[in-house]
Amino acid sequence: MTIEERLQRLEDVVAITQLVASYGPLVDAGEAERVAELWTEDGIYDVDEYYMGSRAEVDAMVRSDAHQGLIGQGCSHFLGPAHVTVDGDRAVAVCESVLLVRHGDRVFPARIGANHFELARTTTGWQTTRRTTRGLDGGTDARDLLSRTGRI
Amino acid sequence: MTIEERLQRLEDVVAITQLVASYGPLVDAGEAERVAELWTEDGIYDVDEYYMGSRAEVDAMVRSDAHQGLIGQGCSHFLGPAHVTVDGDRAVAVCESVLLVRHGDRVFPARIGANHFELARTTTGWQTTRRTTRGLDGGTDARDLLSRTGRI
Amino acid sequence: MTIEERLQRLEDVVAITQLVASYGPLVDAGEAERVAELWTEDGIYDVDEYYMGSRAEVDAMVRSDAHQGLIGQGCSHFLGPAHVTVDGDRAVAVCESVLLVRHGDRVFPARIGANHFELARTTTGWQTTRRTTRGLDGGTDARDLLSRTGRI
Image 1 (cartoon, rainbow over the protein chains, first blue to last red):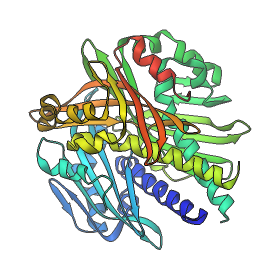
Image 2 (cartoon, rainbow over the protein chains, first blue to last red):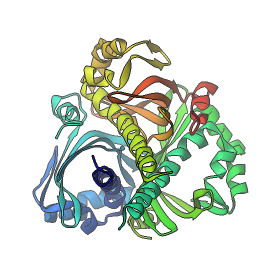
Image 3 (cartoon, chains in turn red, green, brown):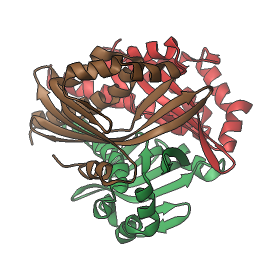
Image 4 (tube, each protein chain N blue to C red):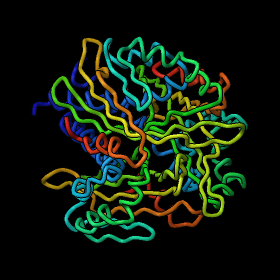
């Protein structure tokens, strides 16, 4: 690879780890628009109990009573460091997550999850085309997502 | 941007993510001096219940009975991957954190927090000029910090 | 340093943070071979209660009833962002970790730990020659590992 290609590869991996690292802070801040902008216009966010089929639906999730209730209690959508695989203008990132929620003056881990991001290089940088999140509940769905680490 | 500028940008982001990644291990090891050296001489560490106005006061916090007591019980100041924004010789990094503490043979999440680092490029590398940490308790302080992700 | 050397340094740090970031997802997926390939053939994984002296023994740990039982309950081996120090063809990475386990529909932090990776540059990229993990139980073993952050 040329210097230019090696630099581009590093910039891609760093940009994507940074995108993933921004999700938790932005969603716990309630920054609906900026969370939604992590996806393409028709990007998908598919969570166990919640399917969002567009940036607008991600925005609506952040503004929903359910999410605002969590924020009002005190919560952390804590995502681990992402493992990133880039292939040209497409990429995959995988990480685990834990949702921590306050009840009174105590904090509980409410949920652990597997997160699989499919991303595309757009004119405004990397964006998520599909994020799939499944609870690490002992079933095969979450484990299948995790086993796709390193695979486009 | 030139190759040199792109490389410098990557080095800055990586150096700052590495600085943030070293805080937890060093503070849980009780390495008072090395924790303090993550700040400038007059750097500020402003936590909910604790205001430190210099490197010396950060050092004293690590040596304090309160912190040594936590270490002696078994604890992890677990910081998530940092989102970093660089502008010349200044930078901002944001991440969430969870403090995990052992009681007997059980582990409890004692606190979840929002962390906002302001950093400066010094002759010895990037250092923290101000770190602000607020509990994710449902109030606006922590959420305001998180909403500054990506903003200098 | 030349452009080439600076680029190489960044590639090394990123490759190693990515290796560490892949451990949790792969081990929770039960991907025994791919977990084992994070080590050299005779690489060591030394955990409090479990000493593995080769890649084959790491592979066997992932396939063991104990680990498969954890996966079947639902678990997350959640590793924090690694702090990486490179010296030529050798490197050290340090991070903290928390093991989260489901019991019924609740999630508990079962263990917090200090992780110290020694790595070598091989013909197929960076691999772990020795990983030492100790519980953050208030004793000196885990704290000694953490104090080696930034030291080869």
